[in-house]
Length: 292
Image 1: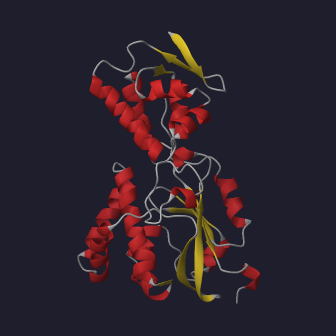
Image 2 (image 1 turned 30 degrees about the vertical axis):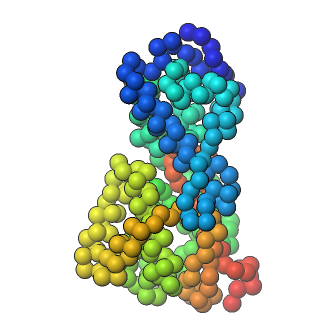
Image 3 (image 1 turned 135 degrees about the vertical axis):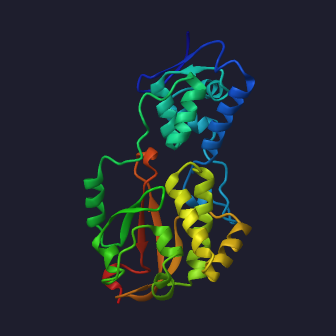
């Protein structure tokens, strides 16, 4: 084994002359997986990563990925082409840097080593109390959701938006299926809420088609659309274009204290890329203490 690169935390990338597997298509699958994951990562601020048509530009370059891994560009290029083998610790670092799902990480290990990953890539967060404290410390309505749009944590400001009504437990179900929401809370429902979120659901399914929660949501949407004519019409329209949610998008909402107002949606992710969790904040046009 010849050392071709070292990660800054002491993990080594080692090369076996035969590289990955023996069949050319195995190397091609490995390279295609890594390239797809690199291209799906936002490399910069949202405004630099999203085009005017709402399409995502190419994500991390090989140079940027190599820098984040602490190895040379040449070493990373060899690794991505399947010419080198790597230790499990390095593969996990790649999975983190490229924001791989548990399934993508699993496939990478199988293609690279021929073996199952040493431990599951968790979709759970270990710091829930700290995340709850972060939410509770903010005067802005906010929540923490997972890959399947389930709302796992909220703060009082978020619960106040519904003024005694049932607080949503799943973002997509509430926006697209709850008829009371579209009639009393979500203003400009068709163009401002339903269409963008239908397109986001399609993008999420394309990225993680194995995710049972997303598949179940899609089934519920299709079942509801059979009797819900407005939703059925919008589901057809949503196929016309792609949509990637940029930070700074604005939506119209009827707040019980503020009245009809335009809010800005801001999203941040915890450093644990594996979990696919995200914080979402509903930001009013003025400081909260200046709102009606």
